[in-house]
Image (cartoon, rainbow, N blue to C red; front, side, top):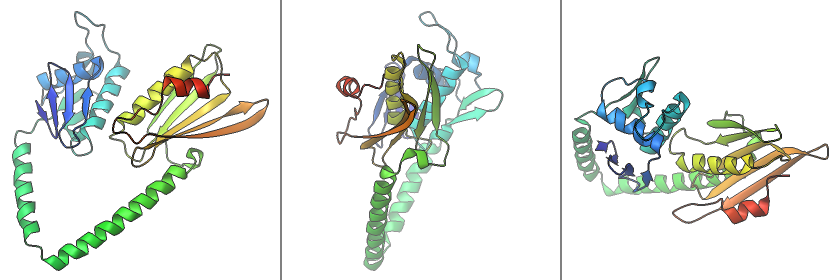
Length: 259
């Protein structure tokens, strides 16, 4: 089933982005929500229906359905996230415009013809402008990666409060320049949250997370208190592989976020 630039294999629960070639094996919640939206496409589907129990699984909570919608939109990307529409007070609707593929094909052909008419001098001007823009983006990305997360004035796109066995609470905040395509950052936040939740107590009270523009640097800022003194710890993890890991069991054991 085609969803914008993505191809969904309903039987395997596999979502493939045909532009980036990224593949996502959907968890149960995302798979169920997307499958039901497809079965009732162009219709408003209430949360209760999207999260309904089946023969093998219990029902999903409203928050699980909401999170599944957020994750699906993130994977679809900014071009196609509008396909999943929120109908306030009623539920969600998957809009499948049968003419969307045709419109994209016509647009691509029109753009190709238009580009063919551009003379060589215009091509050179555009190339120079592109190079300058790329340099500016690289410089800006490097600068943003060095900025301490505590100085950010924008609100985090995701935030959760963890309660440890001792009753201590830790706030985990994730920052991103976009509300979409944050699948990797969300997964890293969940991985770090799971490790922190196993602590009986920790000196850290606030944890701030972000990825560099090129998603090759994972920034972690820890803020807390030791011996009555405020402490801050900044960590930067790099991973230049195509399939990012950043957080490993060995690294988490070495850093030891618990007291």
